[in-house]
Image 1: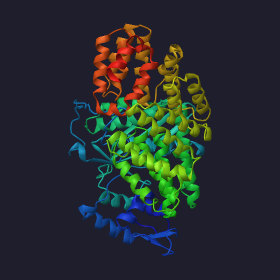
Image 2: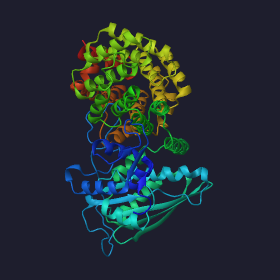
Image 3: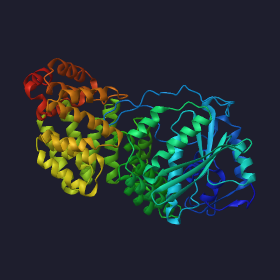
Image 4: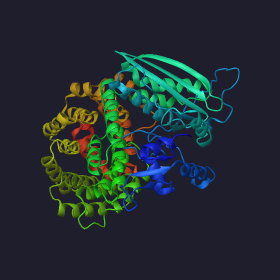
Length: 596
């Protein structure tokens, strides 16, 4: 590949191997990547590697099928979705059957074997301070194309010279290479990209898009459609539909691109594990899937610098737990990863408070989603944590949630009172935390609507997310302020699971207003969704009872309460019945039938 024989940093090593630094560090630990250190007694010492040794290692990997290098796929692909409490999973793929009649196919293999190497998009005509656009659109295209089962993606470090092209062809075995250029001129965007056949360097796509900057998010889909069309590969329309339904506004999207560009620039030159850890905590606290993945990178970087850094292991475990806690990916393997990390900390005499809160949260998720008998173990963990850290907000918040779950299953009013007390303590310690939205929900179920609204307004001052708005819309509905509630739910465009959840509430509002025609249209929309929420039948019973369709209302409740998962929260739904005016006419018979 030419150039100097010695590579003097992880950055140079990752560029040579054409994979990100984190992957290369993982290969050192799990696949014996030949990386050396100037001080062999310290894992934090500066590293170097010899190109000849890396080449030999690559050849060994190519010839050993049991240890082959696997290309990283996007986190957005969920391999198993079991119980959907907060989000819906797309379960059916719809493929285009039309081929476009090219005189001969550019790609002769099976769709599953098409692989594309993607170089960083350039911004040759843009000002230096807008380089974040190029980096952002590169990541967007990579993540989007990785969603398609029939395309394999490799992220490349930079455009190669002639020798590197030969290396890339032999090593990655990619069929096509993609590069491009993005230019911003005021409110307009010009994006040009090439798709090159790796075998003979022939350009098979040379295309240019002209769009308004507000439509920048549409570029990734346009690129994907162009590639699928040109290569005669079926395009999965369901992926495009799901992204179109959850498109975020242009302004926060632009801020997201800028934030990650700045973060990556800082991260490349950061050698202080504590700084990396606290940056990770910041991004973890933003509670979006994108920020969570940035936090993962930062916690891993901190651990690479200090393998005894207890708090970084806990932070990384919290990030893995988030995938299920926020409904991004219901794959139990995230919990296994989190558990392995927390086990590195539990032998400590006085673990940090986040250790106890993370472990308890993990155990409760196992109980809720995977029917493991771990709730008592979770409670014991919280008790131990509170004995050492009685004023820790997360530990008090999780204690509140434990009593909420126990009340839901057993109906003991003392448990609900305990849930309120611990929730109040957590709120008073940390009044602006996003976790206080759960406390607001407890107040809602207790009929304290005005107080619940005050809590949300406090959270909104520092965290004006869609989740906060959704909770406010819920409170307004149960307060009877249907106009304000409908106004919020009608504007709920993202994320997708909240947009769909808002649709159910709009149906309940139409029912309470006795607007049967509008309700019929909303029910039709919900029936066309790929898969319903777990509480689908409960919300539908509210809609039917609201328009006095007693037969359908009880049919929905029978189906709902026959589900085993419902029994874990049964008495919490009793409280929803008591505060939802759609149930008023049938309240007494519902209570006798299902709760007494």
